[in-house]
Image (cartoon, rainbow, N blue to C red; front, side, top):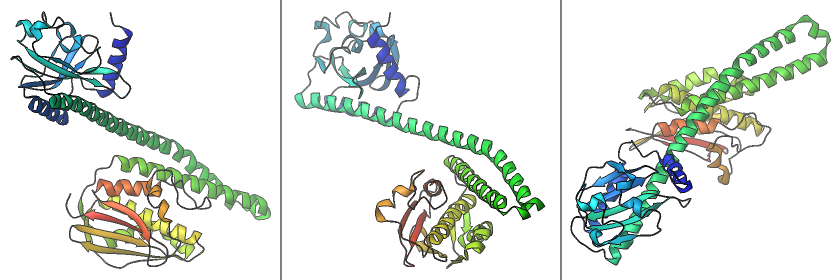
Length: 391
């Protein structure tokens, strides 16, 4: 019958998803190091639940599982601290154990250090053993404890990475679903508002017409926000399809999409060079559209006519693409934070939910590159990203 401690241990083990999974290379490296520093042929990482002992990494023997009753480490896991036994035949805890009597093995020297999770739960041991009587020096004993701590560090890192991946997948799935669910009624709402605003009855009702115009603008902003969320979700799972991309042609395509905003603001966008880079044409188009649209939007917010310049610098191992504007410079202390989702570097009077630059970072990192903000020689902000020449 499982005790409360067994249930707690089982739940802690389940968080790491070790049992039944392929051996983790970093764990394998730690058991090999443990065997070397302790001067023995065999070292094992044992994970012990309420029923079984699972060897998740081993050197000197083939990793396997056994009943908990047969486990030597299960006899000491409830006792805190390192255990060193020069001759297991002379120790009452192990003398009748199948690993000592010859039924399974002929262990003589045994030493172990417990694997303690950050919450204080012992989930197993890092143990070393030999079929010869032996001892463990003070230095080797300390090394065994240190390596046991390293095992937990590896498991925690693996758990956190997995949790982050799952969290991102859930966020992307949620954003995709919400975006799709909102887009259809928003499209219908915008259509009805346009019909109402164009109806003859509005000619004699200026206040109603003004209210409709404001509602139409609000629906437009909501549609833009939904599109941003959908892009963010899509890019999260995107794997770049690398081809040769002409930056100038990509910018031309972006300018066609942004034509309405450019005409309305009087913005001028120029590309200083036509250069081929390695990248995903679709993702780079999303990336440049975000950066150029930001440059226009925030320059207008600074009460200036946007003058945006896109330039390409060829580097020894890639390309640096810059988008310069003549608006305000993003403060130094905000230049990293604005790349996080839902973060904005400008006032609330500027439209948007702060997801565009987070999308840009995802795209650039998917290409193996880097992205950042600096002050622009034009007086505003320079958004730049570097694409590597090789994957």
